[in-house]
Image (tube, rainbow, N blue to C red; front, side, top):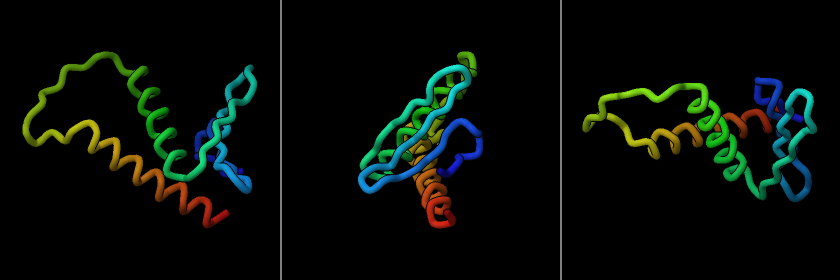
Length: 92
C-alpha cells in the first residue's frame, strides 16, 4: 500500500483495479475503485480541490487576460499528480 503523504489516502492495486483507500478517524475506510491510473489521479485531484475550496471562504480576485483558466490549472495539477503516483508505484 502506497501512502500519498497525508496518512489519509492510500493506493493499492490488484490485477484489475487501482484502489484508493480513504481513511477517516472513527469511521470505516472508504474504497474507491478505478480501472486506470488516469481516473485515479483525476479523482484525487478533484477531491483535494473540493477540500481546499471548502476550507477557504469566498474570495474576490481580479480576473484578467493573464489569469489562467480554472480547467487548465486543474489539468496541469492532475498531470503532475499522475506523474507523482507513477513515480511512487515504480519505487514500490
